[in-house]
Image (cartoon, rainbow, N blue to C red; front, side, top):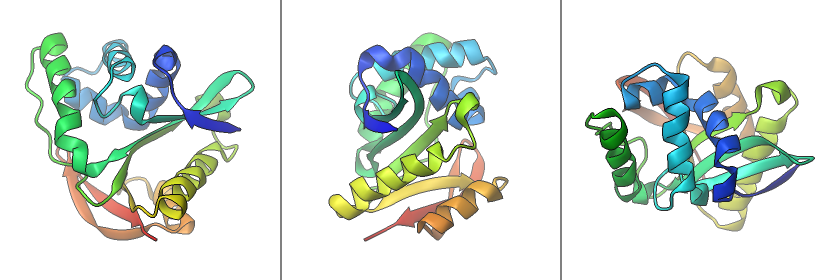
Length: 185
């Protein structure tokens, strides 16, 4: 699998994979449980520059000519700046205010979401994406990687711990308490 930075033209392939990774949170953000509306919202964000879901923050995994995985990663210190366009789009599209808890902070590159195409799950693609991110951000750039995991997802937590992430605390996002893990040099 080839892993590279995304382009804005790939937004229609990327948005569904992001939604897979953050479905309940996306619905909480937009205020409606509609996959179509959430995909439209995410597709718009992926195409735009300067927001947390922008193609600029997306790594894509390519197998053949198909995008089979996406990872959204950004500097946690930029969260407030990256959220402003997200809040503006939610206000414009859904007429609601958007001001969730901070899911990350300065001092870590935050893995916002990782999604693998449903037809390709169970093939190790997610693990390969995480290994790529660890190599790129921790080993090469000497940065700390952070992520949140749902307490109701012990399988994912086991994977993250096996890869070398450590539990460092808890954070609340969209009213849900999640475990905060980090991988440091």
